[in-house]
Length: 517
Image (cartoon, rainbow, N blue to C red; front, side, top):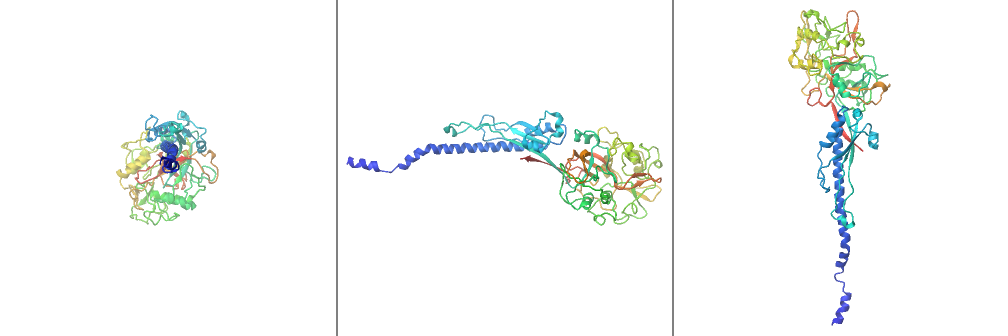
């Protein structure tokens, strides 16, 4: 009996799979363990990279060229975004920290990680256009991989590089050339010139051969597109790059009538359909200027609201100063009988360039007393505070905003049949939410390398400018010319930002950080 069982046992194959499984179990455990630990490693790498990306984007939002921009960028990159890792188990906690922050001037340097500098290089804040952040190295200690004699990962870190892209939207694009000398901090330079008058462009004068101060609208159609940007409350097309716009060569004198619609002047000769539209090209809420309307016939829409040769005319005693000094006297007869917000005194006289440090940039000194006598029949009462440091009386922009709610809609000029209007009469006032029609952004360029024709430029910065006057030919009885139709003049408000001008839905400047591959 026993002899028959032995051969049977030797040939029996039941349970063979169990032996195979036992022999393969070690390999299966190793494979499963490596897969688990590798998954943890990949997840930790993703966590660190996400943290680096967010930190770089946060830091890039601060790169505006100000003297403290790099310091703010480091702070934002390190503290603004709170990231954690759930996969690292190296006893350093869950929080992901930043170990290194570097800056670059060009995208090529950023992509190659060359010619970098740090926030300690305090003189290079205006060169900091890109930021690179690196996370603190972390480790993952393996749960199963020690079976194959690997107990932890190597040090794992992540890095990301970002820059700041900007666009100027829904506004007519103009540029001016920077004054002579170096502007090391454009934002601070703009701040120091708040309230100063500025000649944005002069009729027939170019900043460079063929370039008269216009930037490409990016919507085609040449002068017509530019006219739409000046006239329309909601211009067509997309935004203009704030970082690398293109110049738009040519004088484009045809845009002047469309520019003047912002002052409630509508000419038959405008080259887009503003003349017959009440809302397409609205005037500013406060459109006071130095031209007046007759009171003998009540002005109505589409009547007596055309060019100065028709409905709008200069008064009998317009503002025509012959010296760069304030006017004096104690009665209204010593002053203009109608007046808009004037140019700086050094720009108001025919020989303006002889009085200003820069031909196109004034010093903020304007004749507020003459303006007050002309519009209110008394000397300026010093009743409007100014928020601009260093000034002894308000800026024109501050007076303009004060008048919106504190001044009467019009003033009858004594002993005449003329009326000076503050409120628009040729078109309806703009609807709520319309961007301020007398505020536009202007690019500041270093024009030393600006040549003829269309070319891509890199603005030092953008500033908001308050438009003080319509573009008109102004002269006196002796034939002296004070301004020309084709001049655009304004006053520096400050650095262009989002929502500038007080309209809740206004988007002027869009800054968007982006990652660099």
